[in-house]
Length: 140
Image 1: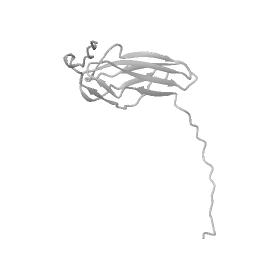
Image 2: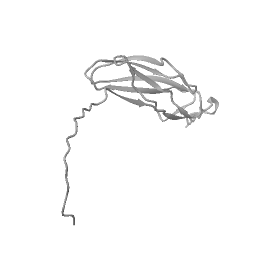
Image 3: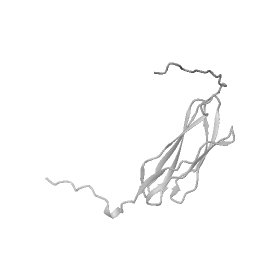
Image 4: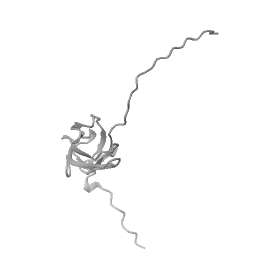
């Protein structure tokens, strides 16, 4: 039963917003097997009209060995996506934190990523003498 309503208007300053120049997505498997290589990919999307060059590196870790390069330089065209893949070999069993991926822009001389630890589960490998063998062919 309110009969009186008070209103007031205030002019707000203009605020300019923009979408980030890059977006980064990490693709990793949910689990691995001890001693077997697994592929981790970094997808970097360039949202700007400028050609970008990025330096990408994986930090050292005691839980994985690297099979191949652990750092790379990537060129990303305007409005396109670049995929960089790393081969990691787990050497520790259990829930393991993946190495941090460090990405820096050469144009802006700035690091792009924040620390986002990702964990996967590494299963022990099956000894070769206990692996299941296919059944022998049936003789008719």
